[in-house]
Length: 598
Image (cartoon, rainbow, N blue to C red):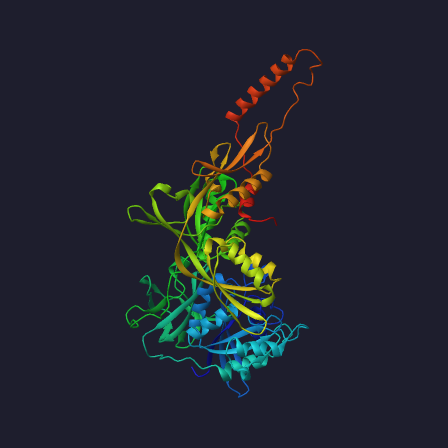
């Protein structure tokens, strides 16, 4: 165990985690140059295209240090986005140390602080690394000062590196050996291992990624997962070296995988503890919790015949992404589909893109919403995530909505613009403090419903990309909630209903009506688009009809001839309206989701 080091790389989005991982893998020679490709640990197409990490990945690196000894370095690469914070925290719980990457031109950002606090909660040894020192805009001394002032870290240990150019990679490897502590544990104690990730292999079932704290595990052992009491017989154990390398047994301090014929990923929960069935450990590793979805949306196939394919696709996707929660749903306008829960808006986008690409489906998503808490007149509490399930307002005593505590770090010249944006979104300014002489951290309490639309995009645009944002959910706050319905020719379209704050209802209804007017094609009769709260109409747009000039053939003569033709046309249009169906195109559903012109 003295020759093992378990560490993670943590950073804000786009500060170079995956590139540094690539260089460490190349430096230790576990893969040939011919087989190497950029972002080698990111194995999804979406991860490569967007340049983000969605799933944690681990790799075991053999390294001969300057002291002449062989070391095993277990690296766990983590996602940087706030949606996947729980996964990052479980990866950190599997380590003794972490490298905190800071971009030499961007400096310390919100997620840098959030990830540092996560690492300190797990009592890890943190080594700061200033990355991208080769950039013309790199300000190394400024970033060093930030690390000292904002993070309260010692500047003597800072490693300077450029993952892209391969500068400082040897220093990072030596730092892992000399500055990070070896794992503690007892190989003779009962097995205690933490699951920090899992993925699905179509031939072998679920592959569980874990870190052993105590004991040993070998092929043939009967193990139990402590959260759901499931018992499995181990078929294979081993370590990750880009590919899976089977071993006879793994012992305390090591990071590896096991295969035990587990059929679904949802049986192996991130943060769960594995132990032997007969010789159990006394208590599980602390910190396990089920990931809670915060954003809800319904997914429907564009063609209702594709419902069977969507059902199969959802089942297969659930095998690879256990954090997606879904149940059957139906809509009068869109037919059968699924109501899904996601960890955040990025997670929703990733799931939608994977369904469309990997399973060749065309999908419609309803407006994302959050979970509201409704207290009825009789004292009963109801949790609602779907506007169609909103109860009759006369039976409601109180409605509550989830609030978040947002930490926004910006240069001080953008303070006014950020404050205006947050106050527009019903934010409450709690605090702000200067981190350096021109950068400040602003703390706001905001309703989650106001953040899930386009808040992050707006923040990035008004701060010219310099603003960084991190949040955590603080609980439910009383609110004045109404359900805004959209009526097309007097028919309620349930898939376009939204739950909104009363003050924003008119603006949101007007926005929806204006957008639908642009998207719905003209008919031979007048089409009314209305926004309503209950029976009260709060906005309206009218799509003018196509009109044939029936009086064109009348040259002169009595006016009653023209009037007779116009009355005949009027009756025809009235009859057409009673039997006519207004087809709502797919683009109309997507248009309602946008709150401003893009």
